[in-house]
Length: 223
Ligand SMILES: Cc1ncc(C[n+]2csc(CCO)c2C)c(N)n1
Image (tube, rainbow, N blue to C red):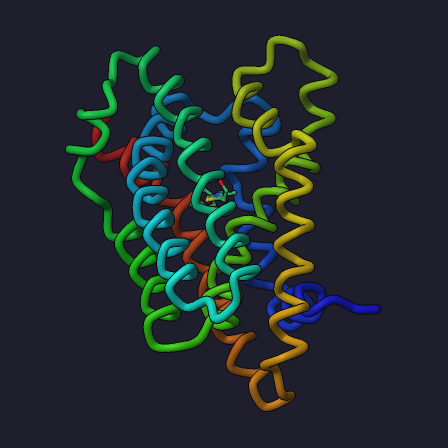
């Protein structure tokens, strides 16, 4: 059976492809992405994850069942764990967690995170999960696509990042996210609503693409 995720992706395919096939990803795969671009991305991503953790806390609040609460709590825990990758990599560049938290948020970070939070505040748990989905499922798709680059090149400069998202734990979490959206949609989705959900999903995918682009802009600006 077709999942809601597959339907959303098909309905927003050009935005989705601009996100998962962004030059940032192509250059990361080739190992040619300039390190300052990656660093700027990762600093903003740390700030992003702080807000994303709040969005999962909002998902707990928007849950009507204990099962949904546990799923949102699992997402929150995974984010707090994912931030260890950022702390570890940034430490090597001489940046402490306190310095990361003190970095100014770029507009692209503000736009994406506050958009997701607003979807959750103004909508229900399904709206919020659809806004969260490109993040989780897109990174899993990117991880799978970039995994062969690691196998081909043991000293790949972006090995840790790619390993995180191509790893089995993360791939399973993305599958769980797809299944959870189906379960929520079975309760709450009408065909009329599908169009609204597609708009949310496509917007989040565009904000993801802008997030990659921001790395290049900030690195140019600081050069
Ligand atoms: C801009 C941006 N988009 C997606 C992710 C990936 N991500 C963020 S939270 C989360 C859930 C579990 O950790 C995942 C996979 C990211 N790091 N940064």
